[in-house]
Image (cartoon, rainbow, N blue to C red; front, side, top):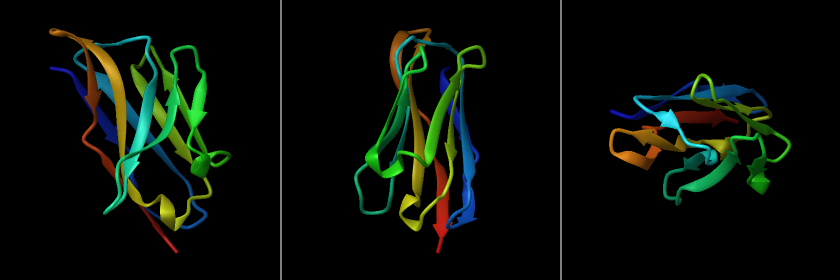
Length: 119
């Protein structure tokens, strides 16, 4: 069974840093882009960053220059380094990836990890 498991969330003061990790199990990553999204209470889920298998990255304007996405294809993992965190970064963060499982290629979401930034 394919799973994406996130870790690394928590409570941090404004200006601090956190590193999120997401590991895929039960299947093989496709060559498609992997991404991080977030959802704050009362808001829609929004794209934070994506990275292709070749390492090309894309960021939401609100996190450019503060967040960095990376991936390790051998470890079937994607990471999000978050620096200079702001209270408005508070949200549940989800990773997203296309994974080859028993049933073929499907899009998967992780269970989410809470990030809370205090002012």
